Image 1 (tube, rainbow, N blue to C red):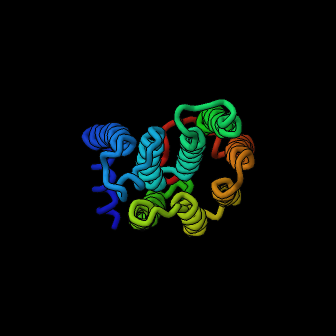
Image 2 (cartoon, rainbow, N blue to C red):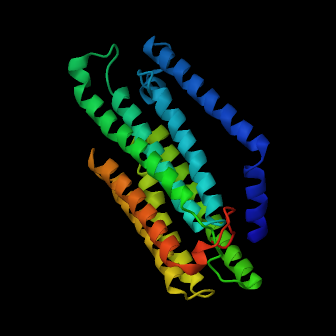
Image 3 (tube, one colour):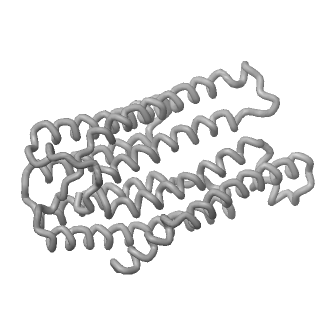
Length: 286
């Protein structure tokens, strides 16, 4: 499993893969715009027209959804490198989800847009866009506070075994992510039903985080390491709650998760002697 993970990670992080993803996003965005315009003109069969919709902002939603899928895949691969960076990636993804929802709020309006219809949507955009911006700022502080140290101690063999365990977990998470994505795509495209893809995936992340905490105890029982990793899992729980929370509350919970992770990192750096060592490069056992 470790070799499979390494092979997939190498391919995924290559320059060719990034260019392919960027091209696919552009094609999906422009293709959806064209399809919506054809639907508005009545040039598509009724079943296809109902699936595509007649609002051009649907193209923005499709592009953001695919972008989020790309970011989630990067999160899964990053989980094996650094627990703290994986938490940061979770917060990044949630901020993008808030931005996507702000576009969705505008996309629900009829064209041409009128202010008397747009008032509630504008308030939602301000709330979720402002929450995304606040998380972006807090994340800047969070990453600056990182002092990556091996969580599995100084024994190279222990560190290698801990990394291998995280890679196995990440590979299983990747397979589950693909299955959930396929089910969500089928449900949305064929049945036209709403999906809870990100809620389900963040629920899985909670269990993955806790599993990594328990496995890390095999290699290090140091209180500060167990506390930090467990605390970072709390941030994931808050993000999971935020995904199903109503408007205004979701942005507040997401910001609370970012602030909690940042405060936890600052406390870990201040009161843990081993965390004060210099070095900005991520340690694979973190």
